[in-house]
Amino acid sequence: MTASFDQLELEFHERAARARAMGGERKLAARREAGILNARERIDRLADPGSFTEFGLFAQSAREPDRERTPADGKISGLVRIDGRPAAVVSNDFTVMGASSASTNSRKVGHVKDIATKRGLPIVFIGESTGARMPDVMGARGIGAGDRPTQYRRMRETPWVSAVLGHCYGSSSWYAALSDFVVMRKGAVMAVSSVKLTSMAISEAMDPEDLGGWRMHTDVTGMVDLAVDTDEQALDAVRRFLSYLPSHHREAPPAGPSGPELRPDGKRIRQLLPLERTKVYDMRKILDCIVDRGSLFEMKARYAKNIVTALARIDGRVVGVVANNPLHKGGAIDVDACEKATAFMVLCDSFNVPLLFFVDQPGFLIGIEGERRGAIGRVMNWMNAISLVTVPKFSVIVRKTYGQAVLNMGGGGNSDVVLMWPSAEINFMDPRHAVTIVHGVKREDDPDRYDALLDEMAKETSAYEMASPYNGHIVTMPEDTRDTLRELLDSAGLRMTGGVGEHLMRTWPTSY
Image 1 (tube, one colour):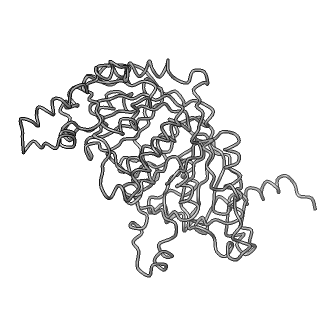
Image 2 (image 1 turned 90 degrees about the vertical axis):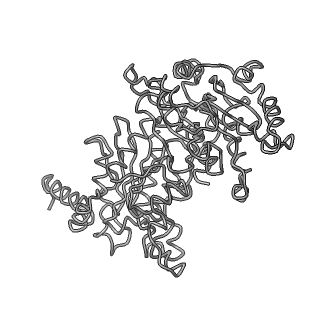
Image 3 (image 1 turned 60 degrees about the vertical axis):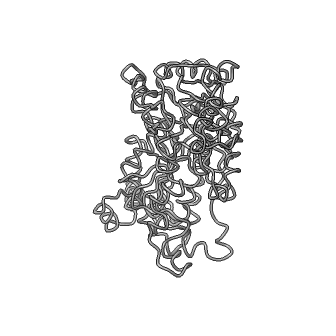
């Protein structure tokens, strides 16, 4: 007997309802009680209302015994709009077999990635998964399944973003490591393998927080850019991050709002900046006096605090900021700061974001620990990266800048334009140390000779001395910096390519 359209429609809605029920009401209720969104609610929070086009609603496990208990096969995927712009999304459904990876859902993820890459869409990975599904991947046949062979290749055609919102092992942690921005809910865990498996491997009990909690990844590994308290805050952070970036690498970043109400009070810099180079201050407060009000979006704020990396806007134009912060370690640059700054430069260059360097540093933090961690290589990674940057680079020397790090922070021809405040001091090293190194004189041994030599070695280190041979290009008062940068962003931008750079670092490792 031929079915009617009414019957077909009834079957369709019944099947769709079962698929959208995910792992069942009991599991969903437990999440509600814990204040944690489910996979579909997370998409609803992220996406513009009514914009989700789902792929694979009726997908199921390839194993016959698991078909009826794997709605959407545990990974919900498709296309959305975020603030009106198209994007791709994968949301792991932990209520379905722990969102474990298997052949069907790997095809779903691969399909979304392929469309996003070819059509220029950002990808958002909403992570919460147990890893590979057993027994699907057991044996020689199962080990090769999945989105191969380019599953983990990053060519930075489009931005990738990850939200770590639960226990993330396997694919969720892999995609987080590959992403340009990672936000983590406190209480979530991200690691190579589960706590249970790790405890078995090392034959001792393991605390999930110690294995891969938010403090570990924001303070120690630097793999998480931002930690928040709730799922909702995490997804809002994803939206905000994407608002600074283009949808793909062949377009300029989107313009943001502009107007006099967003103009900060530049004259406050005089109150915030101590002229004595040994006194500390928070560089982020200086930045807030230059960029549009409320636009400073700091990344990895808890990691390598001696350097600030942030997205921001100046008169609506998106910029990337790399700034020394004397509040921590006097602004000296260590291994972690090198890695943080280099990764941020790669991000900005890959997605056509002009770079601004704000400089106040005493050089590199030297010592045995840094050398053991390959400080030399990290310094040169930074120099290699800055030489490959093709977006506009503007450097502002706020106060002191010494040694090789002068070059790392955009001096010595490594920026298109170098601006200097009258408070700037440029030298090979701090003159106080140079007196002892060069002449072998310490203040406590011979204060009169020390002071005379110090005066001699401190000569010709001012902004005007740097401007005289044209090693620096503009001397400006701090309160005029914003206007100068605004003009530079307009006139010295990537005008002939529509704001698009060459992307020479598009294959640079995302985590190293």
